[in-house]
Length: 283
Image (cartoon, helix red, strand yellow):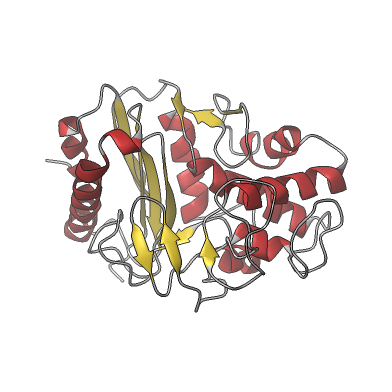
């Protein structure tokens, strides 16, 4: 039995999930039901920003020209939660590179910087740079670039496939996205725990040695992805050569304790299935 059947026991009204490899995809649930992705949005926003970096519209390490931020902050700081902004709010609460402070504001400032430099609304740039090229026709940004995308399982499969084997980003850009940024920083993964260090890439959380965690115990340290407060999660393990996405319509804080048991269980089952089937690299 596929690991996907585990999600049918989750305490949610609607769930759709998929296992994505280079060789094919397994899915369960209504693939066309629209879900709020919540913070999975951050990964898609970061992807668009990095397309902007490749196009020369913004500079990953140059000064921010269009948004207010702590002295010395760059796009790299904003995307890796190292710019000194708190969870929400326009006023910085720390200097750069002091600690990993998960921040909607930082991601929103990154999107605003790109939008101003490109002279177009961010939602339009996101659509042209990421959504349309990947064929994500049912995906729409309806608010904050940090948590405002609505999408479907089928469209999220397309994005997880991009995370697994990118075609929108050059190999060196992709490597930068999934590399730990400011790797010694400690910090908190909201509703999960405090970790020292607390590795993060550019828009993506990196598993590292975090434990306990919302990813699986069997996930490699290189696994990257995100979870969302709307009860959503996705990750790619580049060593196992597999990715997953699971979408629900129950807020994470309503089943927090259960999710932090069920999500790792599901992730570990996916990795065990991948090893058994030989569909991943087995690395």
